[in-house]
Amino acid sequence: DWFLEHKRFRFKATVLKNPAEKFTGKYVSGNDTATIILSKGNLWIKNGFKESSFSELKPASENTFFFNENSLNEIKYITDNNGFMTSFVFYEDLRRPYLKVK
Image 1 (cartoon, one colour):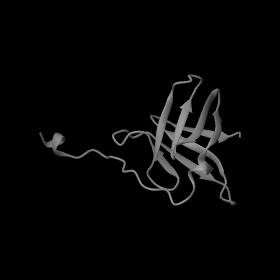
Image 2: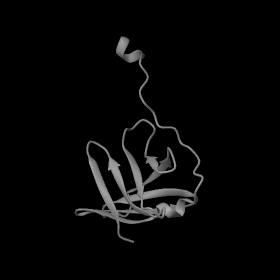
Image 3: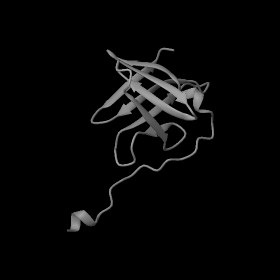
Image 4: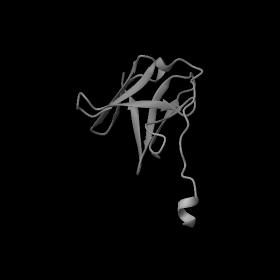
């Protein structure tokens, strides 16, 4: 009972101050490809080659996004000195960096 009384961590969505377009693009990590698009004001990620495998990215902060408030998986964007998105890191059971290619 003691364990069940504790609350689990949950992400909470926030509103972005900067335009979401800056997060879009194609990213690669080894043989894996991720495409991030903006559709109807929301960011979506397509991971891999399946056409129907889009998942919504929900902002937790100005550079961190999550898929589901009950999940610990997240994406954290990395910017260069000029503020351009150069990559992101996908945190799941491991840390997987993706570099922006276009």
